[in-house]
Image 1 (cartoon, rainbow, N blue to C red):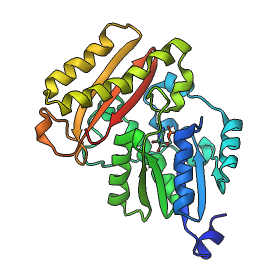
Image 2 (image 1 turned 60 degrees about the vertical axis):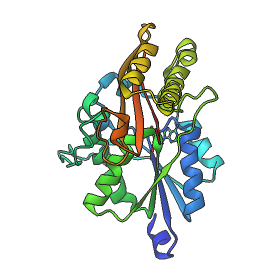
Image 3 (image 1 turned 90 degrees about the vertical axis):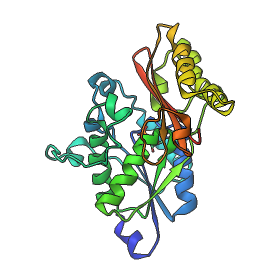
Length: 269
Ligand code: AMP
């Protein structure tokens, strides 16, 4: 299907997703349409990147509305493969990911990034896009994909798109659909505490003081369980001990709200 596009020298933009689409996903489609001639999205809930079976089993699926949303933006094509198509046999490849897979998400979700690398490499092989669009919401995933693209010599250019947020600051996520109204109301605290942490950093507070503040925010409500809050060097993803250890920093957080795990980050921290 994509051969005629390539032969006519039109550029292909690719937006891989796991569906349950929201405005964050649509911002990637819009950017792809701006930058390329033909935009293809994919929807595939990739089993190999879930380290938690109930997270996989409960992952929201809203295919009809997804298609309507993609059509409303005149997305040129949707790739909707089955598990058998993507994994006709078990994928036993282990990717070398430069150590950036060992911190934060990698520490708490063993095997997650290897699964991401498996599926993204297969999707790149299928689609062979000129440009691929990813959200900064998944900051570490973006770093992993950049690393993999370079180390495996994929020709696609990786384009990073900004985080799209709800009015109260909560980063849009398919998993937000699973929050009950009370949990949804509380979840604004995640981005609000990142915002406050940044203000503390700007006013000269130490990383230790900032960490203590952030952990305290989630300590009193049993609905919350903070998994990590780290400030890392944006390029190496090394976890910092002092804010002065790096000039370009990103603050990253993972919090359980009930059994729903949400992540967020603050670039240029
Ligand atoms: P997912 O369907 O969660 O795998 O996400 C597919 C793509 O959408 C990834 O590149 C995500 O980083 C991106 N994405 C998800 N949420 C947002 C958001 N709130 N803002 C921008 N991009 C997002």
